[in-house]
Length: 247
Length: 59
Image (tube, rainbow over all chains, first blue to last red):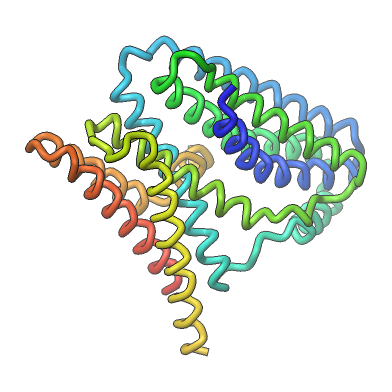
């Protein structure tokens, strides 16, 4: 097991599962658990098939190592930079913080007004689980497959899947007990931390695919993490100052 | 398709910036400067991140 990969995918997946849980809870509590759970299991089934198919396809294409590293690095960067940018804007006060209570209220109100509530609850649950879960699936596959190029002894894809599944069990378990959206989960901070990790790994792996010679080999990852941290924190301070001056 | 585009790409400006970073880094490798290619890659990606974030505050 590669614990760094497990922890990173655990954190990344937690953020997405919390958002999916809010939607499923809204559907279950407003319309009924049968359509909500039907949509959820359908979504999880499609996800499992997607991960299996993509994972196997990537394993077959391992001879294209450099190209795959660039493509996977690109997607890690696109995910990571998007999360970092959003987190920076939220910290600086330009975008409202993500609020699960608010999202839950909006979804509940939407379902109460729906003409075919049963069908709508199933569709909303399916879409919520599938869309949030697809982000998890891409992160799991990207992390698992890229790390596989670096190590022959561990099974990074399995480590990534374990992280994602552990977070699913935890989030569903807590949601099942409390029957409330998990608004206390520091989603914005988690997204920021995971954004730092995804961006750093994205730069590192795409660089390896492009033929970059990194100083200190794998240790450069820590340096990349620190640079992203300093750059975004600097941006937050500057944006806050600008906002204060404009106010 | 739009859902998939939003999910995978999200922001086309980010995509352009990252692809530019890849091209410049690869060019550095090709001209025999693989040690500097990492600096180029990171610098362009950071500029993209900060630039796109700044642009979003202007709306």
